[in-house]
Length: 434
Image (cartoon, rainbow, N blue to C red; front, side, top):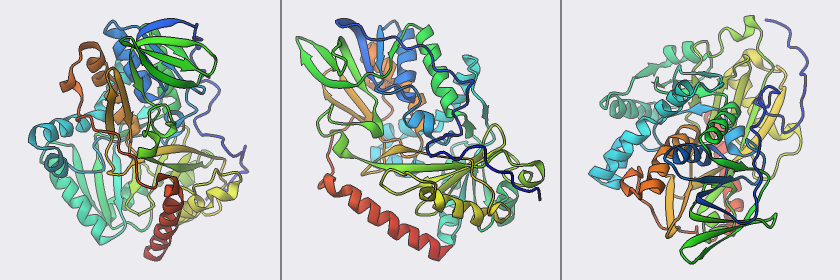
């Protein structure tokens, strides 16, 4: 075993993805009184993918992002591109009905295809690898769930494999799993590079992107939408897409209160030396485990091990706030116990009460989408072409699942307290379960 080297940097908020070579596309500042066919609030995967495809359909598109590109979840996530949803096909068909359910299953089965096809067809400079995703089961109950998931997806033609303890040990190099499920449709990307790549091709298609501009109000006037911003500039739009997800505020009444946002924490080691890293995810798969407070991990393009999971509700401020991930890394890979952590960061993710993504159409010409449920890279990128078809042609059949009313969660203001208590309880159960 090589001697661990001292970390180059340990600053809180230093993402593994923030490499100097990825320079954000030039911003196009708003001019007061602009008009457009489609205004998109939020410059993440959904906003940029919709902008690209809507512009190519001939719509004039204005994207308005409150921060710099990549400062939200799209640039801070783990870069796992996973098809499907939290729920498996049979449940989705039973829940949505035969026609809508089968349409949704078909859509979510192809979300990873959309991402990797886009990278290839647009020649995006995005480090990526399509070696699959592993659902790792640490209990007999979780392994039974993996077997049922395998049955359902393999019967629909998915390139997948049920893994026993020996196979998952070989593929992950990790300790403690009873088996799992390998979905070869999945893969990994460098998410910040994908965000910037989408922005560049959207701009080339004619979409205009303003960053550092907070939208403060949406109002319907004389058959169009007025978009007010903190800078004082206004935009007149025929249609509006709100794609703010976990960063939603009071722009649409009740939207933020219909979501529970959580902090997703991540850590990254320095690039693992050859002798130490050879047995850690040697095939390049991404992994998510079956714990109540799940742990997910992958290798970065430069050979780092990147480990993520849910963290505390308060904003983390010191390295100790990521200690739970360091303990998880040492449990999974005992040889890495004490290995330095070079980077620590976090971002918000949005969860819905029913654990399904939501499309809302609260008023004519206004659409909001929220609730990635951990599938945001594939789901939101693939949803872009569908949303573009909806806005360009009014084609409701293009939407992969039906719009639903906004339903604020009762006692939402106390939700953070309840979530924090639940996380603490689940973390204790996971420790006892090992």
